[in-house]
Image (cartoon, rainbow, N blue to C red; front, side, top):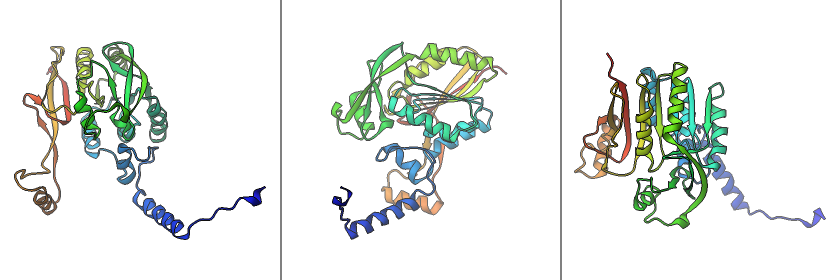
Length: 308
């Protein structure tokens, strides 16, 4: 029976495949040693660059060098690309991710890159209360998944825009029913546990696609008086009001955002600014204070003790 099988391979196609293989192998020789999903938006950077969101990673390294290295909370961890790069700098790592598909890769990736690190994966989302809700996941961007709920502060237009769509269309998403736990209850218990272990200065990364304000308020209302935090989060809602935080009188809070001088002359064409950056050797990324409204982009909440 085996003699009946015969397959002809086109010589030019075989040569093209070998060429693509060689080019891809060279382009990804510095790739992060993690499992990613081909064709997904968040997979391109770790494959081609060998890193993911380097400005965020360097900011977190700056904080750990300043003593904020007791714990790292990755709320909306996805497949763990940030934690895989920064987790080794912390004494304890906690990851929150409700997407069942991502959780499988998350565990593999974190175990591969944080071999001797204590970490715990919490396979649920943080919300207003304990319940089950629908997680909408763009087919081509697992990192853009969001929970459909009245507690989500992003409009359908913002949700569509952040995923690269002209308009919101449910057909462009797959859906999962996921577990949601009370952010206030989970964080209160977690902060108490960390404090009991002498872990009082840490970093929190939040990427929850519209639930940022809810999680920030839960952090502010549950963080103990003698625990200090550096919180980094995304904001896709341009000119969103700063969340009103109910902090203890022993703590202070400051909002900042990650700014840059990529276009030092915004009134000139992009090409002119690019030439200027080449001449001066690059551009700068830095933290800048927030006036009244949160800008779109990467934002920071600094929670510090007011005690002398």
